[in-house]
Image 1 (cartoon, rainbow, N blue to C red):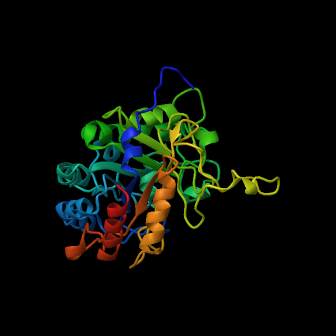
Image 2 (cartoon, one colour; image 1 turned 30 degrees about the vertical axis):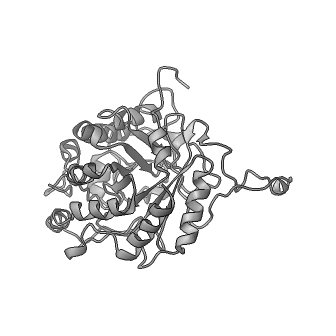
Length: 351
């Protein structure tokens, strides 16, 4: 590892023990096809987000950090960005006029809740104008991003690493980071599936320059790069501060020594022996409902959610629970009550 680069301190994150995560998007997570929302409808939706109401809900649970998605596949984002609009000629812009991140910070800060954000590693795959404008047009099959040759026209100066795109994406992120400064304490970057092709390179753009763009406004903020669902959880880069830790239906657990045999080694489902995985703070992200941002009731009884959170905490780890969030009417920006109840139970049991 380059000795001139230092990871951020994650003690506050470890001490938090658990937190919350919401997918606030124009279409369901990982969905195919563009959202039917017009830019005007998206603006009305974001304008109606009840930031103070959400902050009050979260404060009642005892959570000390919260993740908000900035956007995903459709190209609708919940904050303005001049760099993005200069590169992507959608008119009107699909970026919200309201800076929801800044407004949410104002609502959360009085309760001592730190704000963190989610962003994909790539251009919004279902917005061809954005894909081409940002130069995210690989000559190779990027099906894991929902990008396949033939769905877009590749412009000039395209290389195997998508260097032009990486520089554009870093510039967009840097603008947001500089605007928000210490209002944002962490970034969770999804879709870093092509790391060997794109980021593991001694020359920028690479993992280091990507991380530095996110930390431009707050050098203390923490960064994770998601390689997808991996059990056991891995550290994807020496330039990440905590593990992305995406898990779905198979949860890592501490194993007894009798499992340590050649055909089923202990490490396969096991947690790390301490709080770090190759230098990155151990962290998991999973959903409390039936899927990401889904369900009307929690999928687990309170006892299981509490017990597994403690299980993660016992090795010095952190777990983030994704919960649904309303997108219209009086429920816009609010977590459904059954999930608030489970979060309150979790907060009362794990402090």
